[in-house]
Amino acid sequence: MLRLVTAPTGDIITVAQFKSHARIDISDDDTLIQIYINAAIDHLDGRDGILGRALRPQTWEYVISCFPHEGILLPRPPTIDVDSVKYLDSSQALQTLSASAYRVIQGGGGGSIIRLNDGYVWPVLSGEPDSVRVQFQCGYQDSGSPAVTTVPEAIQHAIYLLVAHWYENREAVSAGNVKSMPFGVERLLSPYMEHAV
Image 1 (cartoon, one colour):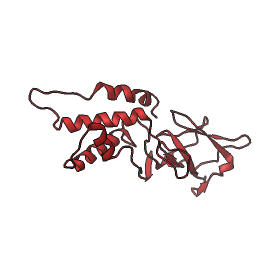
Image 2 (cartoon, rainbow, N blue to C red):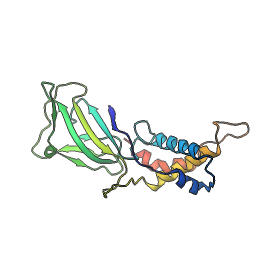
Image 3 (cartoon, one colour):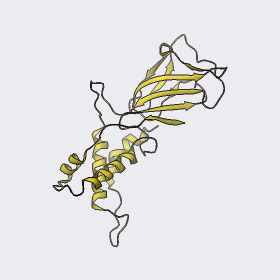
Image 4 (cartoon, rainbow, N blue to C red):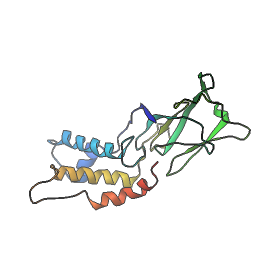
């Protein structure tokens, strides 16, 4: 189970950037364009996004019943950092696993894995469905200070295409004009969907 701790922050594209891309000079539709941008990002990002990954920085709690022998595969790649690994011990007291007991193996395009370091064993748990609780940050972000959102250009371009499509086609279907989503959107997103967790 996933619980959102901190909602996504930061822009992927702005209204001004889209208007430049689409060569729109008027400000009459700025609110509408922002709605389309938000809808496109929501379609791709977070818990319900079709990519199964995090685009903008966000924090989640991943709740599972046990420590898997092979390690904990974190959902919503890419992982930025693991804040804590907590667990209910055999007496149902909430404990925090020492950060020295585990390491995070970055998964690149896929999810990162939390593995035990040599000499450590997973603690004995209470057996409850929510015995293990991992809080982690995820999304495309560089390690600079201040950190900058670094969503891949292919995903950004797909967002531009989606927003442009919705801006030009404001109804689901109109008489004599049945248009589906641009083929380029699927092609741009397919490498990121293959590795979704």
